[in-house]
Image (cartoon, rainbow, N blue to C red):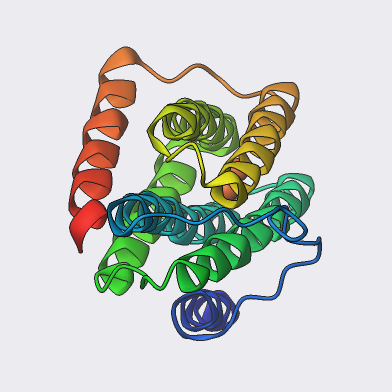
Amino acid sequence: MLNALILAADSALRTLWAEPRASRANPASGVAELPLSDAERRQSGALMRVNHVGEVCAQALYTGQALACQSPALRAQLAEASREETDHLAWTLQRLHALNDRPSVLNPLWYAGAFAIGFAAGKLGGDKVSLGFVVETERQVEAHLQSHMDLLPAADMASRAIVSAMKADEIAHAQMAQKAGAVELPAPVQSLMQAAAKVMTTVAHRL
Ligand SMILES: [Fe+2]
Ligand SMILES: [Fe+2]
C-alpha cells in the first residue's frame, strides 16, 4: 500500500512539476514554422493547452488504473501506454512554450480528479471494466483531437503534426485495450465521461 502511494505521488509530482522527457522525437520538429497572427497564436495556444490538460489526465488515469488493477500483465500494458502518453505530455508542453502560452493553472485539480476516476474504475469494476474505460477514453480523445484538426489555424502545421501523431497513438491504445478483453461501458457511464470531458475542455480553453 505504501509502495502504491509513493508511486502515485511520484507520478503526480513528475506530471505536474517536472519537465516531461519524451522517448520519441517531437513530430513538430522539422516542420516549417509559418507566421501566425496574434489571434491565431492565441487560438492554437488555447487548443494545445486543452490537449496538454488531456495528457495530464491521461497520466493520472493510467496511474490510478495501474494501482487498482489486479493482473500484472494489464499493469505492464497500462505502463506501456502511459509511456507514450508521456511523449504526448512533453510534445504538447513544448508546443505551448513555442506558442508563448502556458499550461492550465488548474492542472493539480485535473490530475487529482482523473486519478480518482481511474482508481475507482479499476477498484470498483475490475480489470475488464478498467480496460473498457481505456477504450472509451481513448475513443473520446481521438474524436476530440480530430475536431482540433479543423479548429487549429491552417498555418499552424507544427501543432497539427503533434495532434495527428497523438491521434494515431490514441487509436492504438484503444485497440490494445480492446484486444486485452475490454467490456463496453454502459451508455450512462459513457455520457457521464463525455460531460466530465466537456467541463475540462471548456475550462482549460481559458484557464
Ligand atoms: Fe495521449
Ligand atoms: Fe492514449
